[in-house]
Length: 267
Image (cartoon, rainbow, N blue to C red; front, side, top):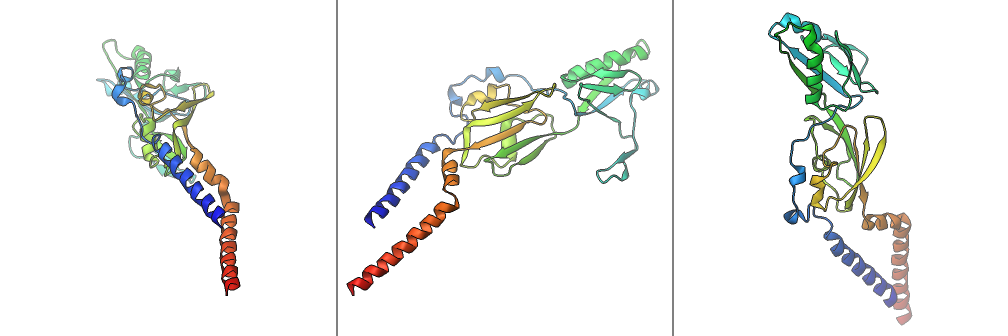
């Protein structure tokens, strides 16, 4: 009996010591007071990727001249397969194909994959100008429809998170997922990214280190997957499983029977 009790006490002490050591790994940006963030200076621009949906507007002083470049759509097919009204004057969207191209009215095929919005606007402007009057200086606006990233693993609310502002950092994505659980490893977060050619790459990120702000992976891209790996405590708890629960129940029953037997023998 004494040996069993000593084993339980020893196990509890080990778990408590592990918890104290692990608490040092919970805080984000631990060295931010001693770190230069100069490398992160500058505003982030999302790059156009295959399967992005673009809305492109061309504005000129003569609306009739720009009309051929601003196609509108009045009807769309909904997710249920039924035809629905999109609204008067809704602009035609342009889906970027796997080669990074769109089919723009009058001009034809445009390669926009890998471009920022600003670069895409300049490209469209240069292609449109030859079709306009000599002194006409068109204003081109490109908008990207919302895209999504996936946050899974040891977070409070895993799932697919929409990005409606064309810009989301990994910290914002994790915040939308309810933050990491106490069992999530802050020092080894996995980012899976697919580039414009369809090639996937894996990157390991340390959220304890403030250098993450200077990282090229601080801002997420379309279809990024963020996976938070469980720490050793969670892994050990998972290894315990139902079999250990049954074992503890068996020990409890055996202890009760032994206690009852001792009392009977004493009497």
